[in-house]
Image (cartoon, rainbow, N blue to C red; front, side, top):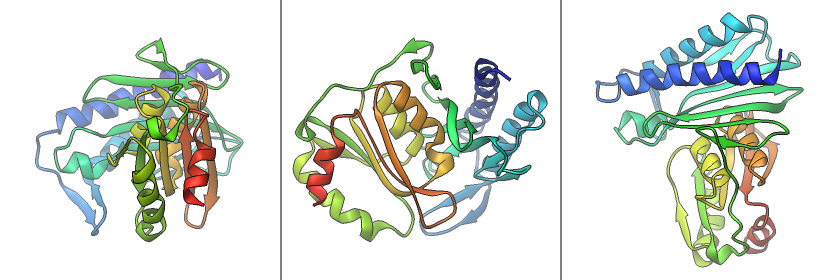
Length: 252
């Protein structure tokens, strides 16, 4: 298997799932489960099955770790990591800010990343060791060196509001603007494309950030992360490579 072949397959799968999202954009959404802070749609499952069918047709032996379930032994050396709809709550409420995220990992390191936003037809891709691209064009992180100039995307993982709020409060005093958009994968690739300068979240799930993290690194940025308590959960500070130390000083 070559990484370029894996990328092409992941792109096909992401576009197929994105097509389902567009087709069902205005339809009544069937909710499989619902909590105060999250929604799981029947379409989440359908999109993941569509992705699985395409990936497994070409790579039948590679297991899949997905938000909507697991196929095969995900402890294998090579695995796919899939979020069929990142930003499900946005999608369920008709907010066109959600995407498909697919990553290929080897020894738990992402080597291929695809993030597809069907609402604006933007396809972000990366292969480790190569430059990140948006719709085939090379992208780079911003060169803004100061937190005071920065646009910072913030995510709130469930049950971690109290942990995140002090940092966010401090950031509002320093950063140019704070944005809470509701899709971790899109926050990451927006940093990669230089639209935002930093993305920060505690307790985010692997499938939300596996592809976007590689895309940031291949765009010249820094994707700092560490595993934390919880299933496939991570703290993340993604930035243009110039701002993490300034964030640490803000957080004290």
